[in-house]
Image (cartoon, rainbow, N blue to C red; front, side):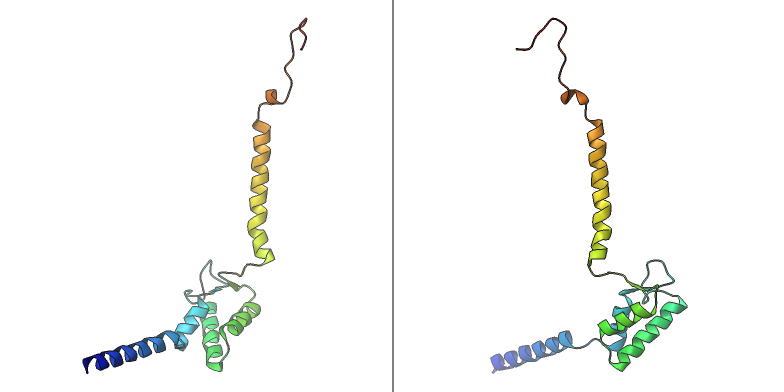
Length: 138
């Protein structure tokens, strides 16, 4: 009998944990999560969820409104990024443009280092040695 009770208890606990893990987050948690992905247009490097600026508060109010209307996270983010020209994603997706922002400066730095190294090499390695007058090479 105790084994049956233990099995039922474990089954119920697993059901509760599974329900908590897969449940949709409450609306305010979801709003803060979305707000943490967007950079505040008037603040330097802060998300709209963390910014005390009036514009960020307005944007968070819009996020909450769109959540209540049933929009997906992607739809809300897309609307805010397109509506507020200064708003950007804090963690932008990797595209050709964002990849170029990392690759081009690295290439310029590498080419500059190679150019500096080629200028500092001694030229005696590449020029043939001259023989004193009267001596011949064999």
